[in-house]
Amino acid sequence: MTLGPDAAGGESLSQTFYGIAQLLESADDSEARVTRVLGRLRSLVPYERCAVLEAVSGGESRLITAPETAPDERARLELATQTLFFRLAAQQGRADEEPSATGATHLAVPLVGLGSVVGVLFVDRAEGAYDEQHLRALSVIAAQLAAHFSMLHAFRRESQRALELSEARRAAEAANRAKDEFLALVSHELRTPLNSILAWVDALRSNDTSETDRKRAVEAIERAVRAQAKLVTDLLDLSCISSAALRLDLCALDPAQLIKEAISRLEPQAKRKAIALAVALDESLTLMADPQRLSQVLVGLVANAIKFTPSGGQVEVRLERQGVLARIRVIDNGSGIKAEVLPRLFEPFSPVDGLTTRSQGGLGVGLALVKDLVELHGGRVSAESSGEQQGSTFTVELPLGGAVQATVEPLRAGAYKPAEPRVLAGVRVLVVDDDPDIGEVLQFVLEAQGAIVSVALSAADALAELTRMMPDVLLSDLAMPGGSGYDLMRNVIARKGELAPPAAALSAYAPGQDLREALACGFRMLLEKPIEPAALITAVATLAGEKTGRAATPLRVESALVD
Image (tube, rainbow, N blue to C red; front, side, top):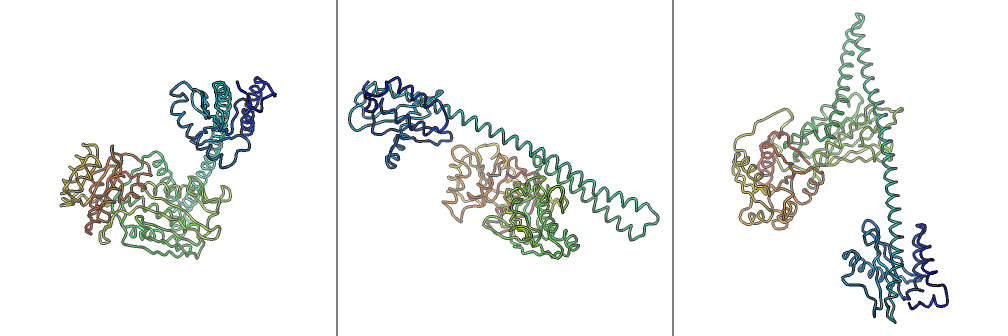
């Protein structure tokens, strides 16, 4: 072997290999150790440029160069070693032919650890060719570097596992504390109204109780029972949501009217504290939502604002259009929210006050329930506050459900109306679904209501159909082979622009991301399979009304699921 100039007259070959092995035994200060190894490598394999690339988990890499490498040279080395690494990794560290250094002015050797390529070692020089002895020496050092990097990777994985275990332990401990606090809160919230009920019941039994006090007793007992009923209902709703058992009954509704009804229900509560309730509503908006659940959200937010607003304060509810969304804002000038509380405000069982110093009652499930119900509708909720005593603003954003005219009276929960015959008479619908059975049953349901239905089994077939006939409504599955519903909608928007038919996306999956991406692509709403016939008819009627300007007949939507 031809020794490099640094080794001439210096340490023996075995001493050099041994010194390098000693340097790579420890994981401490790894980069400095590898840099020293590259410096000592010159005595075995003379070079002008030298670098080692380590592949780090997550697709990242770490480049270590020989001492005194210039920054511009380092950039060129990084590009060269990354190219070599990807080529070697594709070959699983094996060259197509037996490696040879004869006549070469540069050498690249893969670092193979535990059966995978973990890096590449590279050297080159401008003058003089490398021989087989240089290649063998470089291969020995590459094997030592591979073992060193494999050791580092193992340490990192072990450290990551330890961190995950620690985080899991902290999360379990926090959950255990939350459970204990929750049980204490449940005990408090149940016992307090029970004490009131028992005291007033005893007063009612007494013959000495005046008629005025009897009336007070009945009112107090009613308030206590209602408080307990709400507590139990909130807990059951949260349980249903967490187990995916809660379903939405969707219909086209007027959110402005729903807000007015919520305000009307809470006026007595506001009057007791002399709180002014104000509204600013855009009454032209329409939503596809569950009226009972949306009312639950509105009442919860307004009641929360009243609860934390001092006597003589003000609570305002605003409804406005924000692009394809309806934005509802509940604004108060009450006690405000601490900055450290805001991030966990919508977590279950997280009351704003401390456990033993709570100035307000409640289990801390109300806002968590609001968040879950809003997200079930494909929306989002957020809270803002400048701090204590600075008031707060809660914002709910929900996707608009089409331009149903304000003169159409929305369907309320419990006010069932059967589907009117031929409600879709003359409405042209294009159904796109790769499952022929799904397309057939949707066609059957819609044609029974008078619609003119065409079925396409792919995005390509749908685009071809759109060149022949422009439908009033487009219904498209999202997950299809050869082109998704997202791709189809983007293509339709690109071709037709404002003339594109209003569309609803159909999904057999249930992630919240589906609705957000569908709206971003141009869909007006999303329905989850299996779709109840009433839900389908209502959606098509709403979208057809949007295109033609006609009012859609409101229909009760039974058991429709929303992502």
